Image (tube, rainbow, N blue to C red; front, top):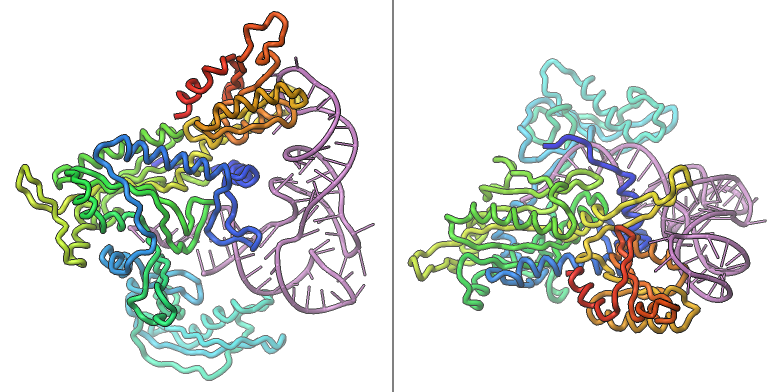
Length: 529
RNA sequence: GCGGGUAUAGCUUAGUGGUAAAGCUCCAGCCUUCCAAGCUGACUAUGAGGGUUCGAUUCCCUCUACCCGCUCCA
């Protein structure tokens, strides 16, 4: 593992700020104070995300003979997620220590025996302060007496003091205290403090379907899917039968998934609502590991093509014990975000776990029959599962750049540039008449705009000076700017040959070249795909 | 979920228990023949809710969101 610190909070702040001010990504429901862990994509962010998804779809579905698409429902039958293990195994009961706030897994606490002392509250006579709240302490060593328990209890009650200058020992415990011998998992083994009741942390959003009259009907429960994968497994047989495809083949899906994360963090990186781009690739059991390696390479190439170079991606071969129990091989693709090295995608060899679970729970046969070898088996699955929002965030982070264009010694002139690959850029080309108060230039520019608009996302701008307009496009990552000038009109003495040509200005180099208007469309199409 | 921090205009920041300031951006106009020129003008803000107060953006409480550290992450 690389231990060098790649974090850069200031850079991240600038990126977040640019995302908002330019309309890439905004906080959800901002005017109402925001919704925790939810984000909205603005006009440019939406274009960017569409481009990422469309390119992913093109490369992984349309340009392959062995991958088919689907689009499953978000509301998910509870039995599907029971079979997958999400309903039962996805939640660990957790307890919090009332004294230290440490969080413990309830099923990992060993029973402690000793004498439990119970208190009902505490007060501070001089200030008149008091609190009523039951609390208990377990003394686990025979050589400790109640003074130890009282001391711990006072520490607990002192947490409720507003005046932090009052020492815990100045408090008086109130109410009847009682004690008994016990053997219990209700106490923190480290300090004897009472723990909270075990609480379930299921990360799935639960909802109820149908009329409100059935509110208590357990059969009305449905979930927002916590991953897109299960909708694929559940439809695997239907897709197979409907499409006449043969193993090995994949089913791809782009769609929303939802997890009630305890702690959303890092801008859009960990959100409660997020979009996945997943392929479940079904194959013969003998081929699983081979395809895992193949998909890893394919996925790395993909990131490179959209502007996230492999040099910034760390491939983690997830070691034994850290993989999901059903996976015998998992690669995590991690990107050097400004807030740390974090996972973009997992390529997991899931064996036949998912399909077998659905066979077991649905009692429907999901075997594959190979007509050539006469074999009947449950296919194994390789799953490249990418986070779409994370990918977009990585693209944004990677694209962000600042340049100082000023001469040495002069005051800095900072150019902000989003160096998106043209393929991914929200706007492909900006059409700019050199001046707006010359109607011929404006008319010609609009002509060029109308020529290109049916084929790509273009932007027309006639306000302000041309240099300013170039910089504006730099900030939102438009790779090409077309300027319509007087030479375009063919009115310049001695430059009649330039009639119906324009200058194309390149975002990254700021260099310009002259192209005939008739050549523009093919020239651009070649560069934006 | 715990601890710490933050919240003033689209962005970045001032400031104050008594009319909230600036730069940039944006918009309109003038000007402008290729990289944020200049001039004029306009718009826009104290996260939400309570409390104290004659008066709160400022002090207090609660909530919400964001950031950092834990924790968690099938």
